[in-house]
Image (cartoon, helix red, strand yellow):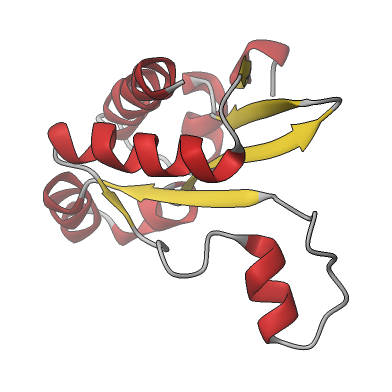
Length: 136
Protein backbone atom coordinates (compact mmCIF):
# COMPACT_ATOMS: atom_id res chain seq x y z
CA UNK A 1 0.00 0.00 0.00
CA UNK A 2 1.23 3.47 -0.87
CA UNK A 3 0.50 6.87 0.67
CA UNK A 4 -1.24 8.03 -2.52
CA UNK A 5 -3.80 5.26 -2.04
CA UNK A 6 -5.32 7.34 0.78
CA UNK A 7 -7.33 10.29 -0.50
CA UNK A 8 -7.56 13.13 2.04
CA UNK A 9 -9.71 16.25 1.67
CA UNK A 10 -11.67 18.78 3.73
CA UNK A 11 -14.98 20.52 3.31
CA UNK A 12 -16.80 23.29 5.12
CA UNK A 13 -19.96 21.17 5.09
CA UNK A 14 -20.98 19.03 8.03
CA UNK A 15 -20.59 15.26 7.58
CA UNK A 16 -24.37 14.96 7.15
CA UNK A 17 -24.45 17.77 4.55
CA UNK A 18 -21.56 16.21 2.65
CA UNK A 19 -23.27 12.78 2.74
CA UNK A 20 -26.49 14.30 1.36
CA UNK A 21 -24.68 16.17 -1.43
CA UNK A 22 -22.46 13.18 -2.20
CA UNK A 23 -25.57 10.99 -2.60
CA UNK A 24 -26.91 13.42 -5.20
CA UNK A 25 -23.60 13.41 -7.08
CA UNK A 26 -23.13 9.63 -7.15
CA UNK A 27 -26.67 9.12 -8.43
CA UNK A 28 -25.84 11.23 -11.50
CA UNK A 29 -23.13 8.72 -12.43
CA UNK A 30 -25.05 5.48 -11.87
CA UNK A 31 -23.75 4.79 -8.37
CA UNK A 32 -25.82 4.26 -5.23
CA UNK A 33 -25.27 4.70 -1.51
CA UNK A 34 -25.57 1.13 -0.35
CA UNK A 35 -26.00 1.92 3.34
CA UNK A 36 -28.02 5.15 3.39
CA UNK A 37 -29.94 4.12 6.52
CA UNK A 38 -26.88 3.12 8.55
CA UNK A 39 -24.01 5.37 7.37
CA UNK A 40 -24.40 7.75 10.35
CA UNK A 41 -22.29 5.67 12.70
CA UNK A 42 -23.23 7.60 15.86
CA UNK A 43 -26.90 6.87 15.23
CA UNK A 44 -26.16 3.27 14.27
CA UNK A 45 -23.99 2.65 17.35
CA UNK A 46 -26.58 4.20 19.69
CA UNK A 47 -29.32 2.05 18.09
CA UNK A 48 -27.30 -1.01 19.11
CA UNK A 49 -26.78 0.21 22.66
CA UNK A 50 -23.19 1.41 22.22
CA UNK A 51 -21.98 4.58 23.89
CA UNK A 52 -21.66 7.23 21.19
CA UNK A 53 -22.36 10.84 22.11
CA UNK A 54 -24.65 13.08 20.10
CA UNK A 55 -21.54 14.86 18.77
CA UNK A 56 -20.15 11.62 17.29
CA UNK A 57 -20.60 12.40 13.61
CA UNK A 58 -18.67 9.85 11.57
CA UNK A 59 -20.42 8.88 8.35
CA UNK A 60 -19.16 5.71 6.62
CA UNK A 61 -20.64 5.97 3.14
CA UNK A 62 -20.63 2.74 1.13
CA UNK A 63 -20.75 3.29 -2.62
CA UNK A 64 -21.70 0.80 -5.31
CA UNK A 65 -22.30 0.90 -9.04
CA UNK A 66 -24.74 -2.02 -9.29
CA UNK A 67 -24.57 -2.53 -13.05
CA UNK A 68 -20.77 -2.67 -13.10
CA UNK A 69 -20.49 -4.65 -9.85
CA UNK A 70 -22.96 -7.32 -10.96
CA UNK A 71 -21.07 -7.96 -14.20
CA UNK A 72 -17.70 -7.90 -12.47
CA UNK A 73 -18.66 -10.33 -9.71
CA UNK A 74 -20.42 -12.67 -12.13
CA UNK A 75 -17.19 -12.83 -14.15
CA UNK A 76 -15.03 -13.52 -11.07
CA UNK A 77 -16.42 -13.70 -7.52
CA UNK A 78 -12.84 -13.56 -6.15
CA UNK A 79 -13.03 -9.83 -6.89
CA UNK A 80 -15.55 -9.36 -4.08
CA UNK A 81 -12.90 -8.93 -1.39
CA UNK A 82 -11.89 -5.59 -2.96
CA UNK A 83 -15.33 -4.40 -4.01
CA UNK A 84 -16.64 -2.60 -0.89
CA UNK A 85 -15.83 1.09 -1.27
CA UNK A 86 -16.32 3.49 1.62
CA UNK A 87 -15.95 7.25 1.86
CA UNK A 88 -15.51 8.53 5.41
CA UNK A 89 -16.72 11.96 6.54
CA UNK A 90 -16.02 13.13 10.09
CA UNK A 91 -15.42 16.31 12.08
CA UNK A 92 -11.98 17.24 13.29
CA UNK A 93 -10.83 20.65 14.50
CA UNK A 94 -13.93 22.42 13.22
CA UNK A 95 -13.80 21.05 9.68
CA UNK A 96 -15.19 17.99 8.02
CA UNK A 97 -12.48 15.58 6.97
CA UNK A 98 -13.00 13.26 4.02
CA UNK A 99 -11.11 10.01 3.53
CA UNK A 100 -11.17 7.34 0.86
CA UNK A 101 -8.87 4.33 0.74
CA UNK A 102 -8.15 2.81 -2.65
CA UNK A 103 -5.69 0.19 -3.83
CA UNK A 104 -3.02 0.49 -6.48
CA UNK A 105 -2.94 -1.93 -9.40
CA UNK A 106 0.07 -3.80 -7.97
CA UNK A 107 -1.73 -4.53 -4.70
CA UNK A 108 -4.92 -5.50 -6.53
CA UNK A 109 -2.96 -7.96 -8.68
CA UNK A 110 -1.42 -9.55 -5.57
CA UNK A 111 -4.86 -10.17 -4.07
CA UNK A 112 -6.85 -11.17 -7.15
CA UNK A 113 -5.15 -12.92 -10.07
CA UNK A 114 -7.16 -11.29 -12.83
CA UNK A 115 -5.85 -9.46 -15.90
CA UNK A 116 -8.84 -7.13 -16.33
CA UNK A 117 -9.83 -6.26 -12.76
CA UNK A 118 -6.93 -3.99 -11.67
CA UNK A 119 -7.59 -1.50 -14.47
CA UNK A 120 -11.34 -1.59 -14.04
CA UNK A 121 -11.10 -1.06 -10.29
CA UNK A 122 -8.61 1.79 -10.76
CA UNK A 123 -11.19 3.51 -12.99
CA UNK A 124 -13.81 3.18 -10.25
CA UNK A 125 -11.43 4.56 -7.63
CA UNK A 126 -10.66 7.58 -9.81
CA UNK A 127 -14.34 8.24 -10.42
CA UNK A 128 -15.07 8.09 -6.69
CA UNK A 129 -12.34 10.67 -6.02
CA UNK A 130 -13.85 12.92 -8.69
CA UNK A 131 -17.32 12.54 -7.16
CA UNK A 132 -15.95 13.41 -3.70
CA UNK A 133 -14.43 16.57 -5.17
CA UNK A 134 -17.70 17.46 -6.87
CA UNK A 135 -19.70 17.05 -3.64
CA UNK A 136 -17.35 18.85 -1.29
